[in-house]
Length: 220
Image (cartoon, rainbow, N blue to C red; front, side, top):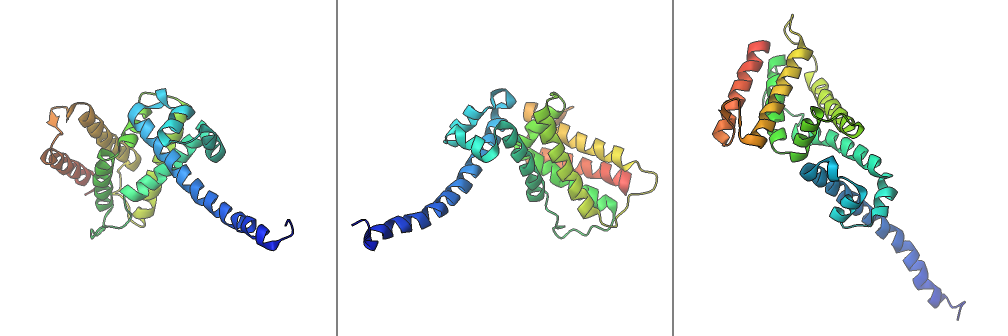
């Protein structure tokens, strides 16, 4: 019976199928872990961010986090890498029908897209808040990943467009981005910023109009 090929055949079939099943399961589990980690960070911050908490949220054994990500630091690195995709997904490189003829066109588009994207993403809002309130290695990693992705977007889109002479582009763009971030964080905390209501779509249209005027006032 041990030499009967009809007995051995099912074992051979299982050997062929099982690796494929594990590969599919691994991809789904990695995604579940990453999504759970991002959701946990967005809701509770780093204070309650740990292997056990992420595993509970993902519904998996914590050993899988060590196996797939190498532990908590590796998971933070993966979230940082995912922030690059956030920029690509939320701030598309196509012009959406808008002709980018000047550097002012480019910065207006970036400013408005960044404003909208930041309003829609609680995790990135958390990261922005941490940047000015916490000085930890984990926060620095996430902040650097986001900044690099945004800078890469600008470099790719800029092409041959150049800003007006005499404008300190680094300083101006830093202030624009900081203003957008502060508006969004203030809106999340209290629904207003310096007397400007930021609750309704009409409120945000006012903010966007003011932002465009500032960009055009500097870059034309």
